[in-house]
Length: 165
Image 1: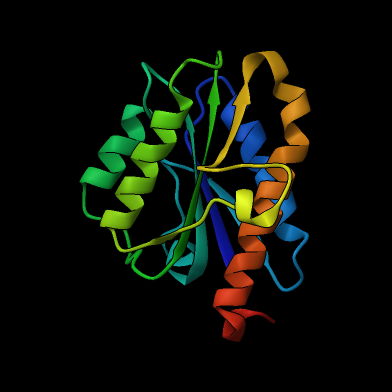
Image 2: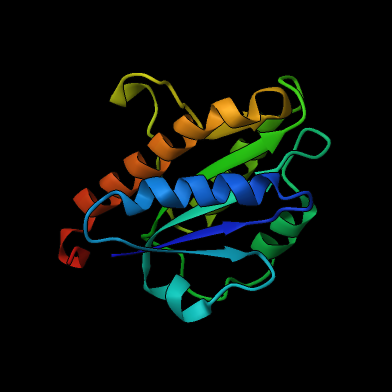
């Protein structure tokens, strides 16, 4: 089963968390995970992916303009029916990462994606809308991001068993 991890990263922190999410997703047997910055997405791999993660830094209490533009334009492939999940990085707790995640999740639903958080229903640690790494606890967030990747990939395998190798 193919999984895409798409991200925008100006400082490298969101890319670092994308790598941890991918590591968690790869821990699920039968997954092939590839990472792509928003400006260099492999359209064929994205089309074949059953799950797609979107990673964003938090700017002015929202997602970055690069994701807003990407979702406003016609998608490079059909996203309908794919499982989607979002994660964010932020400088501080009240920086708006929750709104950034909600914005991405709303765009995913408009494009016909299923959304999944891997949150409270799975037990601790609670993730809710998606994983968030703050500047002050960046390194400490990595285990949460790994769990997030693993949970979403596991749900994708459950939803799309025919895609598992």
